Amino acid sequence: MPAALLQPVARPLHDLLNRYVRTHAVSTSQQIAARFGLGRAVVAEALEALRQENRVLKGDFRPPDRDSTPQWVAEGIFRRLRVRSLQAAREATKPVSPAAYVTFLLTRQGVIGDASAPQALGAYAGVNGVVRVIEQLAGLALPASLWETQIFPARVRDYQPAMLDELLSSGEVLWRGHRQQGAQDGLISLHLSDYRQETLLPADEGKPVTLSLLQQALLSLLREGGGWFVRQLVPRITTQLAQEPDPADIYSAMWDLVWRGYLTMDTWAALRHFTSSPAPRPRPGAHPPQPPQSRQLCRQP
Image (cartoon, rainbow, N blue to C red; front, top):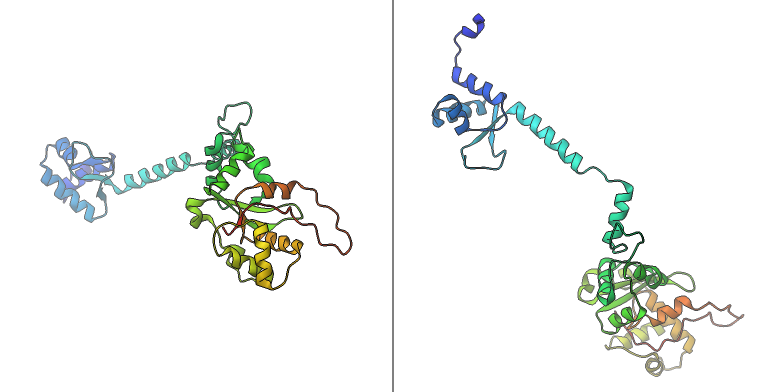
């Protein structure tokens, strides 16, 4: 045996325990004491001295079992375990392929109900399916022309316009205009009435704006509450303004308020007509083409 190994040392027990923890993973005081036939108090005292020297670490490094005595690990071993744990975590969270990500998005949005299906079929059905789509897209402003031609049909396999009208007329769902886009379209968001405070933005997005006298008169009447048919508003506006406005101006003012988020209606019919009607070419000196003179109830969102 080499003579160096036969030389006396100052702290043989500390060196022995330090060598043991450097060659093992996490060990408990009881395991170390049993390995060398020592008392747990003696082992704990020596390991605590090594901890004060930053040579070993004490803590809960693995789930406890029947052995509830303190757990110990060498500082170098702990660093290697930590690096390997981080590497394993990075491997578990590495990006998926683009195809897998697109499939996840389509499934999450209800565009496909079964990733293995040969054709993309809407995952939802019926009025409850329409509610689910609105819940997912609540507050998102999309072109009015797309809601019933692409958004709902792609997600609700048996979608019918009557489903949306039923939800709007019952008050369970409401829509809000954001701005007009071109002559026959505009941005519309849908909201569940129970959560409108969370998804419904203020009209004109809360920005200070100037409204015409006609628009102010319309809003003043509608603030009285309830819903109004257009034919009911005309005589009241005439009384308030002390003059009879041109009907075309009334409808233009109302639709401007719709696209700015001040007014809404209890069905989608007017928007269907607005987005599907061809825009006529205006005659010189005539009023610009107006949206359909809807008979639906107008109210504030």
